Image 1 (cartoon, rainbow, N blue to C red):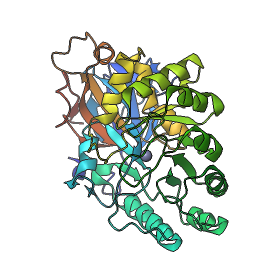
Image 2: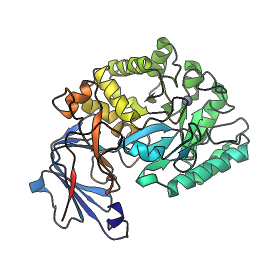
Image 3: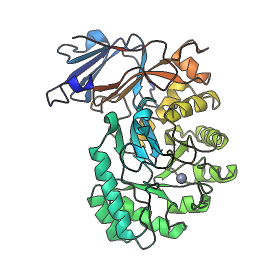
Image 4: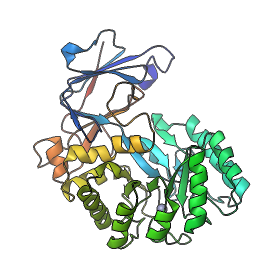
Amino acid sequence: MAAEDPQKSGGPSKLVIKNIGLLLSGDLSRPILEADTIVATNGRIAAIGRARDVDVGGATTMIDAHGVALAPGLIDSHVHPVAGDWTPRQSQINWIDSYLHGGVTTMISAGEVHMPGRPRDVVGVKAMAIFAQRAFAAFRPNGVKIHGGAPVIETGMSEEDFRDLGEAGVKYLGEVGLGGVKDGPTARKMVAWARKYGIQSTIHTGGPSIPGSGLIDKDVVLEADTDVVGHINGGHTALPDEQIRCICEGCRRGLELVHNGNERAALYTLRTAKEMGQLDRIILGTDAPAGSGVQPLGILRMISMLSSLGEMPAEIAVCFATGNTARMRNLDCGLIEVGRAADFVFLDKAQHSAGNTLLDSIRLGDLAGVGMTIIDGIVRTQRSRNTPPATKIPEVVSV
Ligand SMILES: [Zn+2]
């Protein structure tokens, strides 16, 4: 179906989605919108409203949501891709396409650290980052947007190296601490250089993830001052609660909770951020592929875990994986707003969930069923092959 979309052949496109039962905005301050129709032209959201109030004429693709919920496509703030849709970590192929079936339409690399023979010398680090940035910008499995090319800092890097990387289009650093730089002062200096040249940063927080990585404690995290506190709930080994609290209170940076981390520490971080009135700092990732494997439903699982055990309204938990991440990571998707990328996931309660509604089912800890995904206004998948089956699914109707 996607192959027939006029946008793919270069023509103008107009996507109309009608009969949306629940519109989840991704915006913490207003997580549910009073609207049932979205129009997207040429891959961008053009109108949001009630059917009678928006211009639905001239659609090239029409979708009847049949009353199911629509949310921004989910964003995984922490993945470790290598090349193409393949990971050597658990010898898997098509893992990115499988994530799309879990509602993830955008991924941010926290470093291509599983690359066999990963270079550690400065010119090699730069070359690999630029290669990965280029390759993932050009190759999008089933449309999934992968922000790859995230160099892991090594000792000996100079300000000029960060300028070169920034000028070459590199936008994110891999996790500080996975390379040779593990001390606060050096990390702080390089993170500041990166920021100066438009490159965002994250850090490996907690104990070693696999043999060869090391401990990064609260002192190093706070001194390094990365834009995101990567997996503050450990990957997997978390810092003690008092250190997690120190980090939450000691900076205003993003607090990333990952699936491949300590779930109790994730809930502790969530409660702390809630007490502080700073839920806008919470973003979600899977931190996969990793020793724990690949989790196509990892972001949906985090949403249900944080909503049910963290006693968080489901529509708020969805914001952690959409609007919060988009704002913090400077992405043009993740929110249902005019002008944003038309990247959507359709959700409904899973068949036979004890919940009465989608939000109720998530609050009870069940996973949502994905009925369809759309990226850049193009239908990419229909009923998910991975989630429990959604009760109702949207349908492409003839125009
Ligand atoms: Zn890590």
